[in-house]
Length: 172
Image 1 (cartoon, rainbow, N blue to C red):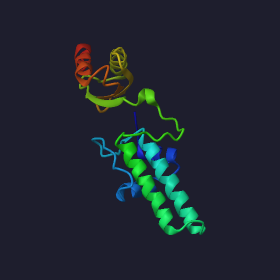
Image 2 (cartoon, helix red, strand yellow):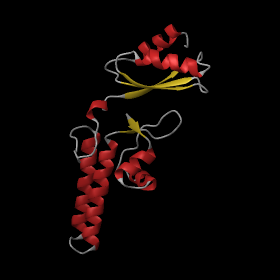
Image 3 (tube, rainbow, N blue to C red):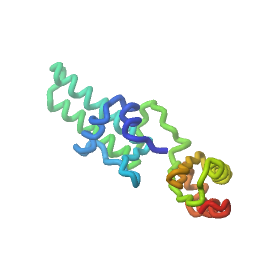
Image 4 (cartoon, one colour):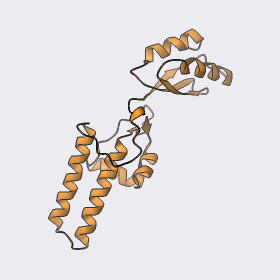
């Protein structure tokens, strides 16, 4: 399952511009983008942002208050960058007690073309047909665009099987 920029920023307690700043500065890796150009953040990105905000906020606050030297604050910030990199590379997962959804960690979204879908009745039949496949968790039809977005576990079903189902239903 993926998140958009606004949701990730809200979950991490930062604004969207802070998120983009972290990407520009290399603190956070730039997430993959959808065909539309929108950023698509994996769930664990929320943890990375929380780590960055926590360590950078703590380091800067303590340095400004004069409780630690700027060099120590920089060290704390560097530590946060390494924690983020390790988490991003999946060498370790920093657990911040957030609502990380391990069950849906392998869920991906696949977009399918459905040129035969012309009405809501069609979209309901497509939804029922695709939901019957093992591993499909959610089907989001778009009648106007003649596209179907499917959230599924790639370990249980794949794009080819979903396309075959659309074809059998008469919508591919």
